[in-house]
Image (cartoon, rainbow, N blue to C red; front, side):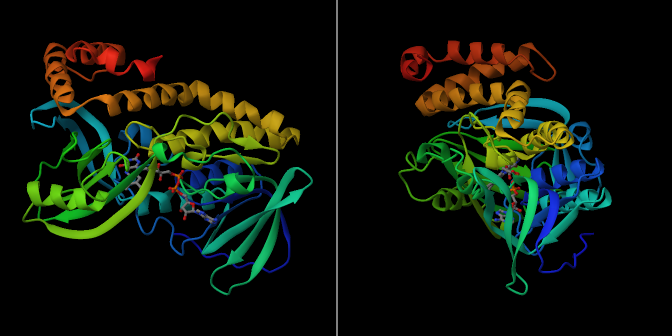
Length: 405
Ligand SMILES: Cc1cc2nc3c(=O)[nH]c(=O)nc-3n(C[C@H](O)[C@H](O)[C@H](O)COP(=O)(O)OP(=O)(O)OC[C@H]3O[C@@H](n4cnc5c(N)ncnc54)[C@H](O)[C@@H]3O)c2cc1C
């Protein structure tokens, strides 16, 4: 349970002020508090994780439990297979026992915040950070507004963390160059569908211009007869309406009798990793630091991994009392080694994907089917996957030359 925190209007001093108590902010708050640093996480929403804006598909039980003990209160399904449909509705399917947990994201975010509190962090919900405090060229705290009573107050901090998601203001205030170019953002929308007759342990993806130009549609099961059904489109490629228009057509075509629940909408980043996520006294983590996968849009595991890398560098920086940009840049390097180099490759693949037409995708999926048939088990050799895909599309190298060279 998240406890409301009582506090006064006077200026306070803390070691770490975290803006946003989502996935990255929640994990990082806990890890730093456990080390003994006075850590406060500010969350502008009254209830952590609510409303949910997510497809809720995360990593395996083992991967998730590395960060927080898995709790059946927020795990709704464990998936064993993934199926990808081509535009012509042929598909490739992969059996991967336990590869993905389907979460209740609100419960998951709340579990991370509760873990942070257990380890000594303070979590202030309904408290919105409005600006940064500066000491010359160094960030030295935040100005916060208590949304409940309208009161504003200052919190001085040795370091400020921007864990404020895709719409990050911390990055802008800190003058870090993180602006998304329009071509890097997908529009994503999703419904919770009920009364759906759907396999409970397999997720499905649909690609092609009819369903989701420049992106994909997803059907992620959430237990019996319930699924998150959504899609992301690239706005410049979606000629037949808004993302929601595409989703309405998709639902009408595949699940005409489903009970349509609440709509979730949001932007999803598809950008390359940032050159730097740090400044003097400030650091970005999670989607604020463009850490999600630009091809899939997935960011849950990346936000956790980003927070883990940030924690190691921040612990050393706080102990040595060096919160300079120069020291914090160790985090840029650590992130690049762990995931950034892969994100770079996925960003190139995203560009390649944009160049393929529906016929190309049909051919790629047919070829991948041959590969899957030939190698049972989880495909881990991505080079083999892409070699197969390239071979399947005659002239693909010519089509994609501007992306590759
Ligand atoms: C429609 C949709 C579907 C998705 N589906 C998936 C999926 O199935 N799997 C997956 O892995 N990823 C998915 N993602 C991406 C995933 O949700 C994000 O990558 C992930 O939430 C990033 O975590 P984060 O901690 O960086 O940011 P967030 O989870 O966005 O947390 C940021 C927090 O900061 C708070 N905040 C912002 N500004 C302030 C402020 N000024 N003061 C105080 N608090 C503030 C916000 O309220 C929020 O709680 C999806 C995204 C969308 C939009």
